[in-house]
Image (cartoon, rainbow, N blue to C red; front, side, top):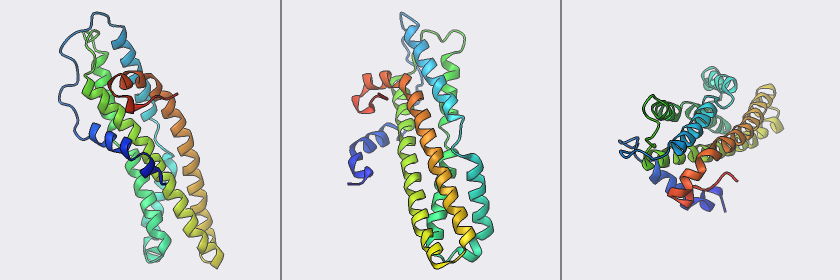
Length: 208
């Protein structure tokens, strides 16, 4: 069973949670105590700080440069499509607009006079869902790394483009290593928000 099949219900839930960005970002009713508001703001700050750290940005830039430079001689090779898909997935992951949206909510949550107004349930659900989806996107990128490296090993066995092929394999290893670090950092950042999310829907899970 693939991970997509194993987590199909959760993936469907996350898609539903992030289908539309909420119009109302904050509750219209103030809290009696500002403590939960501060806790949410702190959790959002941790997520913002994590989102500011892209996945292997130098490797992404190099991967994109290689696409432009070698697309001509390699475009008919079977492994090249896998490599281009990997490069594209890495770029899209790092260009996600979630950072801007979470930063906006965090800024408003910590603005003067906002101390008793909680972010709305819809926006908390959206942020949590979008953040969890990034974990699955990391798995997708890792799958592309494995597929790309596996296919290009055939080039090495045939003795074709040896240095180039080894370079691509090394890039895949670097991306895979970066994914492990990114996932670990995301787990830590998600911990603060998970209690608020599970109170809305237990399918959001916990970092523990």
